[in-house]
Length: 302
Ligand SMILES: Cc1cc2nc3c(=O)[nH]c(=O)nc-3n(C[C@H](O)[C@H](O)[C@H](O)COP(=O)(O)OP(=O)(O)OC[C@H]3O[C@@H](n4cnc5c(N)ncnc54)[C@H](O)[C@@H]3O)c2cc1C
Image (cartoon, rainbow, N blue to C red; front, side):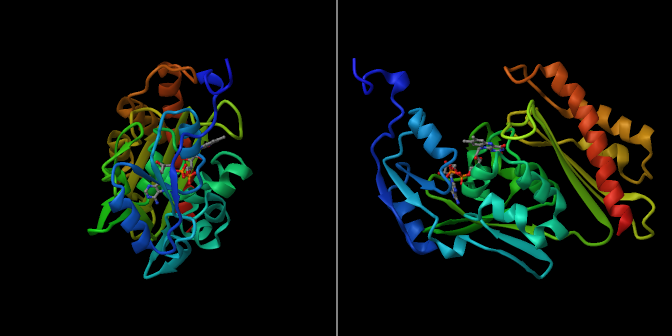
């Protein structure tokens, strides 16, 4: 039996046609022409692996790496616009992101390894829709939106609304994410992201938590809070019970512990080879408390 016949050893890619558009409208043309049979190719760190495993067999790959409109990180009008084909390493290294969206910078820095971060893109991280992905929790906490482009036009969707299940989103087969827009919050705000894995690097999260707080005008109480949990439900989820616990309050260790307990009630974890549901629930309590504390401390310094 040769290697081609022996399925489990055959890591060759299935056949496909490769397209390399130079503009966003050209990319949308390809996606429309081959709708349902085409996939966007960004860094390939997810797609190519799945194609080698024969989990996906797109007949056409539309590479977005040369589409300038899908690149860049720009701060203007109180928003940071990140091109969907921007590499995770560039997001991790961006001064604007570090200053305005520190929790996103932490998430980008914790994704994979330097090699993966140099290939992986923010658009690919969102579209692969893994429940444990590193970028969605902080993007949701900051209230980010994605711009979805197709030959037919454009629509804007909140990152919080885009996931429908593991590997599934509300996107139509011919749609591309062109950019991610993150509003820079006003006033005294802080945010933090914590990822728990078995190893420190090159690890998919067992649990991850992003927290965001904005203080009231005199800087004493929490006016707004968001807690987002990853890897404890089929999609990243908000933890509204934890948010309610801290809203209007001046946090201390007892209150933060209560918020952790409340977040654990919102989580819907499963047992899998990485961790038991019970362990994940316990870690949601601990990480929510730590993430909220760090977010509050950052806000209190502003
Ligand atoms: C060794 C290894 C370690 C990893 N570690 C982590 C980790 O720690 N944390 C983590 O979150 N992920 C991790 N990943 C998963 C993966 O690297 C990331 O999800 C990455 O951000 C995917 O981006 P990409 O550009 O490589 O996407 P691709 O593989 O190119 O694409 C992924 C999917 O998104 C679609 N797509 C890409 N861009 C667009 C777009 N602009 N519009 C529409 N569709 C698009 C593709 O068609 C495909 O379906 C790891 C992967 C590997 C192989």
